[in-house]
Length: 151
Image 1 (cartoon, rainbow, N blue to C red):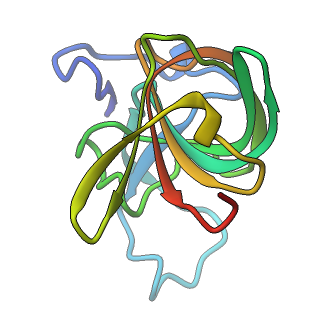
Image 2: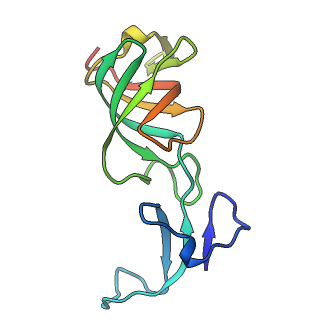
């Protein structure tokens, strides 16, 4: 069975899958005990696009930052965002930061609003885009700084 998790009722054909897509495969055998080289897939699901990435700020420019980041799923389908990666390798993303971009951090007293002046090289961030991230250039709706060590 091949399905698209962004639209659970849509059925895909094997030929609908493309090189570079991220998929979730459920096998007929348990990988922990399987002792075979050829495995059989029970289901193959396309993983939805993400509008969330995490990573380290590498550059700060007027109106943008560059983050070496990893895309993450934005929903619990197919797996929790806290443990799953959509993009298994780090990649540089250029992120537009405007007056409408909310920038926050959390400390012992709770959430704290910041400004673009608080975006520093070396800070670790989670970036939420308005739309699914489909290229290495995007616009940030929210940037959450979770490591202020560089500030």
